Structure formats: structure tokens, C-alpha cells
Amino acid sequence: MFQNSIREFLPYCLPDITEREINEVVSTLKSGWLAKGPKTIEFENRFAEFVGAKYAVGMNSCTAALHISLLAGGIGPGDEVITTPMTFAASANTILHTGATPIFVDIDPLTGCIDPNEIESKITSRTKAIVPVHYAGQACDLDSIYSIADKYNLFVSEDAAHAIYTQYKGRFIGNRPQNTVSFSFYATKNLATGEGGMLVTDDEFIANKARVLITHGMSRNAWKRYAKDGSWTYDIEEPGYKYNMFDLQAAIGIRQLERLGEMQKRRENIASMYNKAFANVPGLLLPTASESTTIHSWHLYIIKINSEKTRINRNEFIEELNKRNIGTSVHFIPVHYMSAYKNRFGYKQGDFPVAEKWFESIVSLPLYPKMSDSDVQYVIDSVSEIIEGAS
Ligand SMILES: Cc1ncc(COP(=O)(O)O)c(C=O)c1O
Image (cartoon, rainbow, N blue to C red; front, side, top):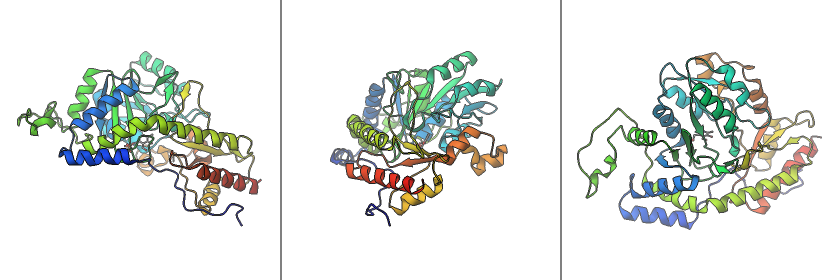
């Protein structure tokens, strides 16, 4: 029998939507302009100002932003792009979508982010870019990554899907970006619009190119063609994509951005409750971040099961939490384990040993602003009970 009484299912993640977001969506619906329009532009401007970038381009996903970043950075067939296997498939799939080849580099065993010390040995004459991922909401070692990029003249497309509010050495991720930084507003993210993403850059050429590419390659501002000051003419500068954000998404985003600081505080609060409670639980390893991560966005709270100190393994631990109605997730199954990658590139177990070992032990616990203190306590009690039972 469980010591704690079982409660209703607690998902590992839920968006935090209030009347403010709902009212903004309703007023946008009533405005009659549903597609890309004034709200998208307002959200782009506010987002650029928030992170401290010159340009922000709203898209329908972070995946789109990652793809467009590489295209705008001139990446294409025959090129090689370095990234991490400890990420969601989007980071690597979008490299393939440009016609380039992803080259995986193993992770730092302390942070789970790409290990800069391993990057240089993977650079060839074909290497054109690096896609570092700010894993779980920490910042990657950007100084080391950019110094390698500068040395070899590589484009850097930062995957900041987890890193809205993260700071590296006191600056928001996306602040004065050297090339491009892509954020996600997917339903599980710290700022959620359901689906959505944002590319930020300080490079005017990239911003303009991205705006054209995300609307079929149409000449700039073609979205205005149904407005009074618009024109029916347009040109297709190159065959582009249909990747733009639209005003209903942006309406949610504007209000979420206003509440981001408050939501971040709650995330920090929950993370510190977990850190305190689990500090002395043998069998658990707590999330760590580099000293350069001056603000952790706490997008994910990833613990590791220390198999040397407990009899329970990661999969059994997840099952035990599930029996207690607690949802969890695993971030991530390494990309090189995926059939599409194994079949095409012949990857096998042992190719990226640090990422593989990391994967075997990780579990993402519930962490989101809407969790009550009693939800957090229930997770703490359940985790402690499971680990105690296996000691
Ligand atoms: C690391 C990482 N990169 C990219 C993405 C893709 O984001 P989106 O769903 O907005 O395309 C995700 C989504 O979960 C992610 O975790």
C-alpha cells in the first residue's frame, strides 16, 4: 500500500492560460483579422525588445524557425551541421530538410548540453554550422561554441526551445544574437501559444530573408494585400514555405509574455522545493547547470536515477510514479536511436556513450506554474517513498 493517498492524475506539464489570454483571443477574433497581421507584428516587436534582439520573426513553430535559420544562413546540400543527439528530433530533422547532414557530437556529462571540447574533432571542410541546444533551460557554453564558430567561420543557429528567460552570464538567450536563436511556444513550453515559434537575429539580411521564406517566398509585406493600404500585386522571389505565425497565436503570446516573469518565479519556486527535498535522497542525482547559466528557465526538471545507490531502474521508477497518478516524461531518447537516423546513417549503440548513459537514467518530473504546493509535495513524497522502498 502507498503511504500517500492516491490523487487525481497530475500531468508532467500543463499550460498556464488565464482570462487575459482568453480575452485577447476573443478581441482578436472580433477584430476580423485572424491571419498574420497587427497582433503578430506587435508580438514580434515585444519579444525582440524582451530578449534584446534587433529583429524577431514569428513562425508557426520552433521547427520552422530552425529550418529557416539554416536556410537564411546559407546552409544546403553537401554541407555538414554539428548538433547534439540529446535533443528533440526537430533540431536534427531541420538540418536534413536543408539537404545538409547532421553530425552529432556527444554531450557534457554534467549538463547534458553539447560538449564543446568534442566539437573541433568533428569539423571537416564541409562543416558550415553548429546547432547547440539549450537543454532543459540551462545555457550552453556559448563562449566556447562561438569561439570555435569564429575560428572555422561557422554559422550558429541556437535552439532555444527550452530557454525563454534563460540567461547566460547575465544576458537573456537571444540577447544581441550573433546569428540566429529559435524559441518554441508549443503547448508545453514556458511561454505557450499552442503551436508557435520565434526566430530572433540582429542581422537585417537574415530577418528579411526569413520573412520572405515563411510566406511562400512572397515579396515583403504581401500579407497586407487585403488591407486598405495594400496592393493586389506580389512576386514570389523564391519558392518558400508557409511557416508564418498568425494573429490568434500572437494574441495568446502577447499576454503570456506579460506574465512570463510571474510564471518564471513559480517555476523557480517549485525547482527550489524539489532541490531542497531531494538534496539528501540517495539514489537520485539532481539537475545541474553550468555557472554561466545565471538564470535557469526551469523548462524541465530532470532527475537522474543513480543505479549505484538504488535497486530501482529508470523505467520501473516511471511506472511507480504512474501508479501514483504522476505523469513524467523522458527528454530525450537520443536522436541517433531513431529508425530514420539509424537506417540512413548506420548509427548504433555505443556511438555517443555519454548521451546514451544519460538517457538510461533520466526522468522529467512535473514542473509548471499551475502546480499547487500540495501537488509539489505529493510528487516529493511519492518520489521519496519509491526511492526509500528500493534502498
Ligand atoms: C529542443 C527542442 N527543439 C525544438 C523543438 C521543436 O519545437 P516546436 O514544437 O515549436 O517546433 C522542441 C520541441 O519540443 C525541442 O524540445
